[in-house]
Image (cartoon, rainbow, N blue to C red):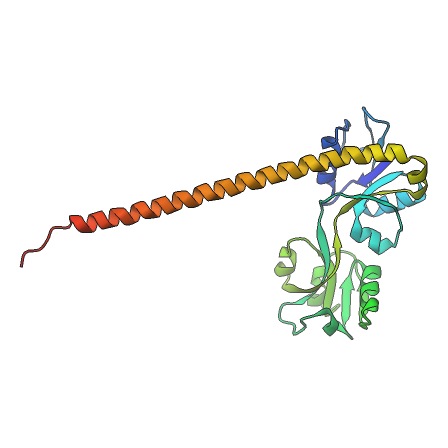
Length: 253
């Protein structure tokens, strides 16, 4: 069985962590295209992010890890085995901070630059909003500044990139995260094996969830401790101040 995963980008590190946490033993190298899993009948293919869906759809790979945004853009109808819960982001419409527009409906008649033209066209068409979608690859955020478009549709994680480029979001187009997909034929013919791999991943995801929950509790306890310490420090300072005031010598008339 073959599993295709991205070799670059935001999904690489969490994907490798997930596979290793699932108990799969393999070595990955920067220039390696294939890694043989030592304890399971599986080859891991390291391919370009945009090629994962094509590899799975054509049957070159039986499974693949990709993003919902990429599935939506290509229109590929691949069986989704599981949502993986990482590489979460959203495809959002944004305009310059000083623009008057407050909603996607107000973009009617304007130019919208994006690296996801198919998804953007479908989104606006479904809402009967007439816009001129301008396909662009890379540096989408600078399109309004260069006069290429009045708005953009781009991937947003924290929103810091939009702020740095003087933009603000006015509406979400699509929610995205990493997902495990399968070739339709492989899903039918290799169901038990795929289910076994899914079980490994599910166990790893549960472990990751417990780790995150544990860290969250530790952070909460640390914050509570700091808050108590600050409260005690303030109380002590206040008490010291009162003692100092009471200790002042009384002036005789």
